[in-house]
Amino acid sequence: MITVLNVAGARPNFMKMAPVHKAMTESGRFRPIFVHTGQHYDDNMSQVFLDDFGLGEPDFELAVGSGTHAQQTAAVMQLIEPVIEEVKPDLLMVYGDVNSTIAAALTAVKLGIRVAHVEAGLRSFDRTMPEEINRILTDAISDFLFAPSSDGIDNLLREGVLEDRTFLVGNVMIDTLMAFRDRADDSKIRHQLGLNDGAYAVATLHRPSNVDDEESLARSVAALIGTAALTSTVLVAHPRTSARLISFGLQEALDKAGVRTIEPLGYINFLALLSKAGVVLTDSGGIQEETTVLGVPCITMRTTTERPVTISEGTNHLVGIDPTLAIKAVEEALGNHFEPRCPSLWDGFASKRIVEILGSL
Ligand code: UD1
Image (cartoon, rainbow, N blue to C red; front, side, top):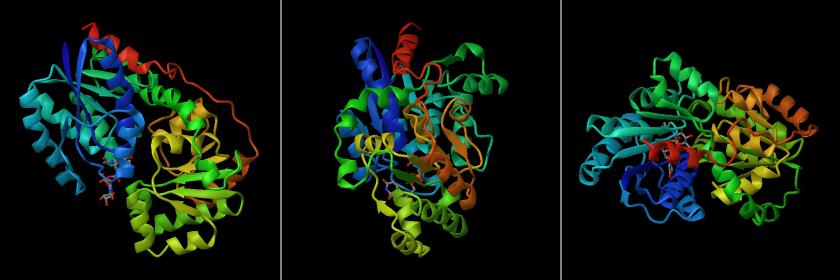
């Protein structure tokens, strides 16, 4: 048996870990142990995903909570060290680019435990993004680098990573999307929100660079108000965003313009909302990938993306935090029809490939 510590802790980790955890369990060759760092802790940022994916209760809960980057990263390191020493895993697996990812990887590698990074090689080339630092550092110290797309492999090789550590396996998030599409079809969320299929916009915003600065958030709000003049608009707000909208006095303007602000949704309801949207406005990473596969136009309110394949092969369009460009892009997108696209190996089998590779080592 190969004992694996599977580390997740923030919302975008759970949909990446779930299919790998399941494939490991089903293979009969692995003993996956779920460590929840507690970087995200509200029920609608964490528990709802464990429930949706049937992950069960974590084997270890570190409950680190919020804090500055240094506090959060350090807390994960301090609390995961004794877990690694107790379990003595053959491998520790981390996902994506959040603070929990680098913290767990760094702790493990210094204890002589091999590390696998799922979603390796993505680069925005913007070092002001905390996630970019987490990506570069995690990739530099990992033993197994599982990339979702070939640009990821190119980036790793350019940075001097040994080729035999890199594996192009496809996109585990899309494994989850494909596994849960039927259940999303049964969701009542669109009906509950009074939305007609294809005739609404979904917005999400949470990047510190977009929401922590008052002027940037005001510009994003202007983009949403302009969108609401064109189509029904729902903002699914991260707790950080909700707090800033209120403290900067911007929530009222959204309400007046008819933008519906709702709390974070679980995976199945969010997928149900996303899949029939006429257009999506976001600064998220994963949503750029999901909209590509769903064939829903995605307007990304950032100047860079670490997921270029969603532009070259998908439905993604970068507009920065420019309300005029965003509204123009929404207008164009609403009249357009996109075919769902699956970049190479975004086929629902990425986690099986990962498990096969690890099982054969
Ligand atoms: C983190 C990730 C980001 C990811 C995002 C998805 C890092 C550096 N960033 O950003 O890459 O896209 O998660 O959601 O790891 N909060 C709550 N309840 C929670 C969690 C957070 O209220 O359950 C609030 C707290 O006020 C906290 C703030 O959100 O201070 C930010 O949380 P944090 O985990 O620091 O980073 P995110 O912005 O969520």
